[in-house]
Image (cartoon, rainbow, N blue to C red; front, side, top):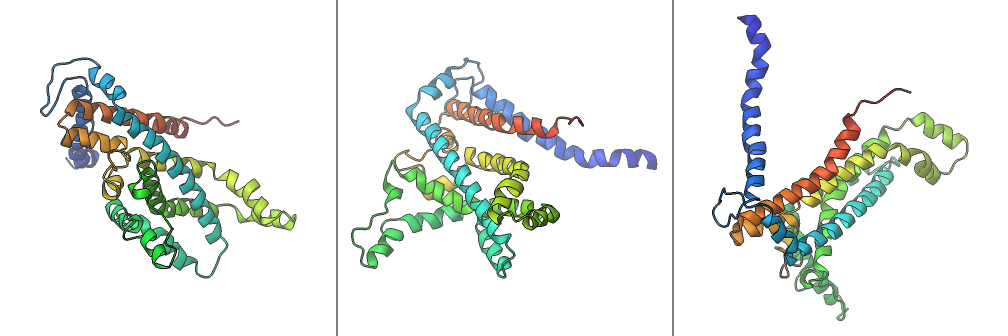
Length: 291
């Protein structure tokens, strides 16, 4: 009996979690895929109708706006967050005295929820309350910074808030990578008279390629499923100028009562995430041959 328990207790302990994941994750993914092939509206229908929902989705102007916004938001968010995170990590890697304080300041936004970040930046960027009002109060009456209410510029306010939230996390990744570099290599390069900037660009940064890839995967995942930051900051507006796929899905499901469209958009989002994550997992998990 004791031997049986020793062999099977771990399985029994994990079984409820495994069943819950099987039902509430993979089961609902399957349910969503099924609904995306039906004519479901406010209530789900289960008669298969083909790919009509996907045809409607890709012909909807609002979905086009959401996908264009995702491209703009994702590209700027990922690139700028990585650049700022790397620069902050290199700065802290210089063993400055106030490193602990600065590291805490840089990491602080990561401790906040995206709802809090969105609300705070909504006040900061509000033309009547934030930066524009403050600068005009200093005497610069012609200063204008009203991106939050400009349909063409509002998506960039989301980019600003997201970068502020995520760059500290990226900095932490890169700082850990910098601290793991063999110091003997750096000392040898310094003895050879190689300038510090060349040591970073030619020796240290190229060895951190896996960290760059990890940061890209994490940031891309955050960009694709971005929802609460947009809702708190712009609520998808003006109009639907700052819609992203996640906010589009929410609007279809809970505002328009169109479950079929919401399910189709969810499946497209999942496909985009898989297109990014699966190659990464393949490259990380495939067996490596020793040469």
